[in-house]
Image 1 (tube, each protein chain N blue to C red):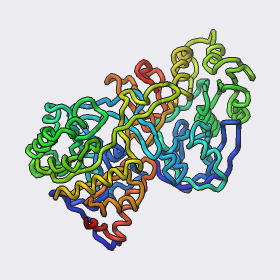
Image 2: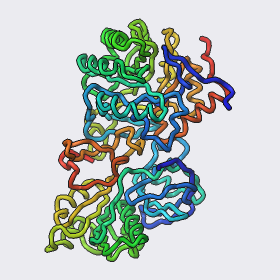
Image 3: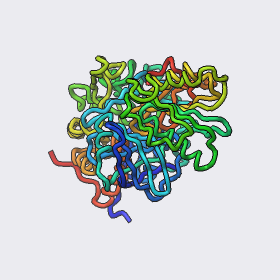
Image 4: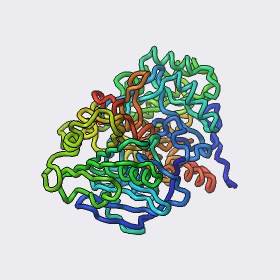
Length: 296
Length: 267
């Protein structure tokens, strides 16, 4: 019997608890059946979908670094039609709360994706991936431009009435808090921070970059101090909830994010090697309560 | 159904300068596994190395889970030298496809490096259930001391060894030896099973597959999730819907080699 209530409100949605699986590593959720009890956690931020299916990037897609993981998946996904007709209902049938991650590709694709999303039963919270570093169009190019960021967020709010809209931001900017403020003013109900940090590595035996696109996205414990700093600054700049993500590898790491100002947290890369972590964080929150944010 | 288990190392054996046998106690409740399936190990509770490491199952008995570990980096080095009694967290059995048994046909297995592990598991599994007829292993290594013939000589009808330096058996690689062995053989007989580096499997498909009714291969890859979620280990496979990317960890590890789009795959 849990001693503390962990229900968490974000926008119009109340989550069972503030522990989510991060988009990307979480896949479409059910892949982890048998390894993680996804019904115990607050929800799963599903793999980012685009309107049309995407094949993702050729060549090497994963490369381990010191305390981190570089990835260049390139938003491979099944597309809106298969996602909404197959993947999402399967998640709902399994009793797992979805947070649907939507890609900002070009404007037309984005518009069609939002239209396809509008009115889908069971979609009451979405996360706009305005920050993927591994695609040529959209992604980070949107999330680093205040005008585009505002336009994309405003359009989501207009097309998805009643749906809680989170904007996932990139740390690859001079001032992420300023962009969070732009998203808030455009109507976002919450900010997810951070997406991966741009990085690269070289294959010394081959004498060339590891990745075809050269630059890739770094996640894992190596980026946690940056993520924590982003959450700290954003939570002091905006009124809306901040969902902290980036390098959480332990219960203590998760607690730090709440203390830095996060309302909820996401676990990403750590589920690859420690699938039990999200449930242990839930256990700890039920045992000791959700830590309060620090005073300035 | 896969699961997350804890187990401990009960036996290790240095088989060659780079290869080690690592035997875990079969965890309580660990499901049965099929040839071509694998486990992923969290080698250390620290974050170095960060990711789990995937290993083909070399054998699974009532009491033991046996892995063949070749030292190629930090993770395999730590596992190979972990003392008996070391506890580890094991996810498995993973993999959504397995080697089908050859039925009444002869089987030829071709292995490079730790690609030997699923071949041994296949031969032992089918021998145990009585479904293995003639089984030839064609197996290559760099030199004699890296050949692990003694590990598996009782599992196959015959072991045909190749070494690059010619120090034992055929001088050359396993694919060249396979070509020599099947020369003049009637097309379409027997089932060919392979596992090893992608270049080896690709060469087998190009040079030798026509001599067999099927060529099934267990592919190797760097993996992160091991369950098909992250899409980090994809391979292009030709289907009636055109070429689609399949996950080696969850759609494989076993594929019909003739369906792989070798031109596009750079694995």
